Amino acid sequence: MFHGYQLPGIRCVSPFQAIEWMTLIFAVKGLAIIGPKGNGHDNGALRYRWYIWGIMVCSFVVAFFHRLAPGVLREELTNAFDLTATSFGTLASMYFYAYMIMQIPVGMLADSLGARITVSIGMFMTALGSLLFGMARTSPLIFLGRFIVGIGVSTVFVCILKIQSRWFREREFATMSGLTLLVGNSGGILAQTPLAVLVTIISWRTVFLFVALVSFLMGVLSFLIIRNDPSEMDFEPVNEMILPESTSRGDLSQLSRAAGNVLAHWPMWPAMIFYAFINGTWLAFLGAWGVSYLTSVYGLPKSQAADFIIWGLLGLIVGSLSVGWISDKLGKRKLPMLTLGWGYTIIWGILVFANGGRPPLGMIKPLFFLMGFCFTCFVLSLSVVKELNLPRYTGVATAVYNTAGFLGVPLVATLIGYIIDRLSPIMDPVAQYHYAFLLIFSMMVTGTLLLIFLPETNCENIHRKGSF
Image (cartoon, rainbow, N blue to C red):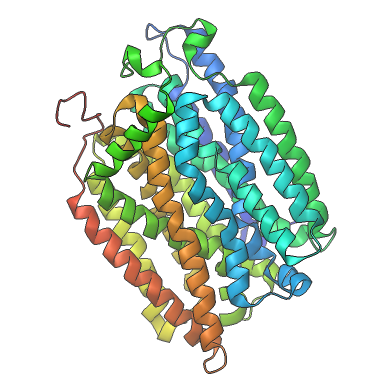
């Protein structure tokens, strides 16, 4: 179905083949780095953890598909439900509103009920939301379906991090977070050109009904396979940094106090504001406005525009594993985060200011690739959050952090829609997106400057060093 691209003097494989090879290479690299080794632990745990991680990361693929699908379906959804640019931005944001609202409750559930029950219920809700989205005939129902999907998939990533903190070693955490992001992004890739082509063959409604079935199966497998801790299968602990009492489940009042302690810990705030801005700008662009930007400003057909977006995802895939691995090897978090944060900011500056807000089309794919690569500094920020907070409250700390990160997405997505609605009667698309992206650039300058105040953890939990 997909063919190679012909460049002057060079015949290239398609982006999909390139992505498949890059994913395979980096996945094999990751598995080689952190695969079972005879280090004194029970190798049964080191083997079984891959079954758990595999089921959870497949659920994360579904979450990523839902996250980015509206950007490709803007025309179909706008026509079917008579949406303005602002209301479309709000529809895309419903996923992120739900995701944001659920982060702290999900963190508490991960630390109390455990990942197994939390993810299983979440995937069943995702199936329900997908079913409603695919069958909706009125605007309120499709908004509700996307909101329910957001509630369901909100359980996955926090629980993956919780599982990683139990089933993987301390120095494997950033590498595993990157590997999780690498595989999960295949869902984002499926939501680009493959989805654009598929909806020309079958309806977008049929696609979401099929995704509902897949989500239901993921819920069943999650319940059958996931275990919260190696001790539940009589394995020896894998993570040498987990204190014995940290495996016990706290009550809700303890978890509520833990959330308050996380918010009172000042180093969390520069990290959270930075995450809100970088995550908000990236996901609002990929999940809602990226394809529309390319079709409106450059006049590309939708399927070709989606090909351009894939280069951003390819950059993210390359960076997601390598950045975490490099940070783990260096034993540093802050310097790599600052370097990549400024790189991401500069790329937005080029999109805003180069050639009057319309950089040459030949620059766009490399810029998107570099943008995706630099965005992976958020993988390091997740490790910083884990290292700034008590090990037994990893779920709550990550949930508080994710709340800030996903607050930025609906804010940016809706603001871009508002700017376009306001400017469309008086300005051409180039000017509309120039001002929309100027907002993004300003946010990133502010957020990256705040990283200066982030402490360096040296890849160690500060509580074990007695500095909290």
